[in-house]
Length: 190
Image (cartoon, rainbow, N blue to C red; front, side, top):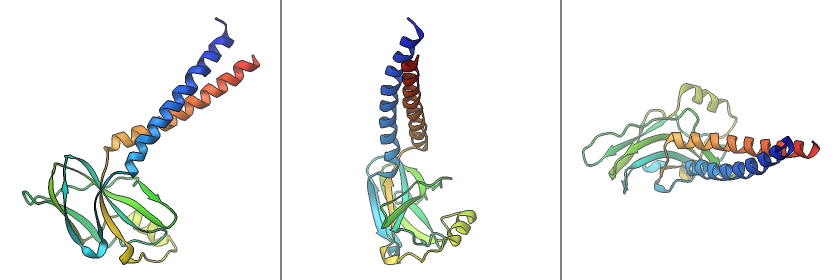
């Protein structure tokens, strides 16, 4: 088998592999943003109960008008397991997933793992962001969000490792497609 045939075989293998990997990885990353909503409450309500029907990973998102400053420095959510009164540990991600449609936006503020059961989400005094994030928000020339159109959501989520794997898969799929196309073009010139 000569080099030209090897390059053509590489082209024929890498491009479809890259496309399949890209599609699978995009679906994996999409799950980070589109988890089922378990609870959605207006910010003004300050407390609500909800039921998790299965153990797993969940996240707390805030949702409101796009390009408006949310009161993230004024509150910190608290989740309590109603069966034993224990608080669920909430963790923040370094890079928070966010999505918008041009009018409304939402961003993940905390993640948590919990068994199935009944819980209470409460809005307490405190802050949901770091000082660096607060300085960045203060620098944005935008008005404050209308608190009547501002919500907190509890959503199904997936482990951080799966999200990162999806991002790596997208990059690898792109490399496979590009590498296969370049190899195929070069084999035609040879």
